[in-house]
Image 1: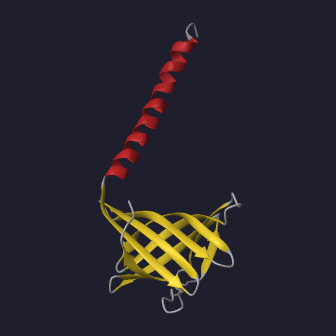
Image 2: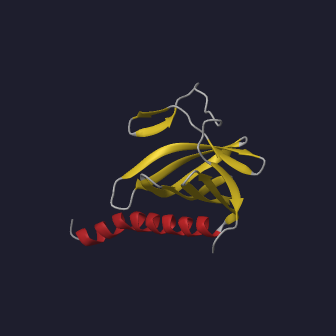
Image 3: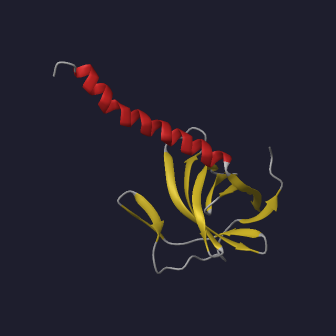
Length: 154
């Protein structure tokens, strides 16, 4: 061990290289969106705004803001993909403006006649991950929000 600095330098190279690769992939993914859609939904006094970006390979990312008049807002990001005519996403969000805690729930949107209908399904959590219970149907009739196409803001 005459040159520990030399050995540490060689050990650190793969780590530095992998960090650079992650940053490059993130930049490439951001720039490669092939389609952007925006939606708005109104239920009484409550509103929701949804922005979706579609990437090559079918990956969907976006932003969902739900403003509840009585409860404040849920604001966060989502990521997922379509399975048939249903968009399944994981929604990572904060509740209200004061809360710093992040929550993560699955959501399902049925695409029908150019609209997205938010479904209601039974969710369970296992090992810190929430997901829809297999074998239990997602009800798109009970959903509060039906999203109509809207013009995207730049």
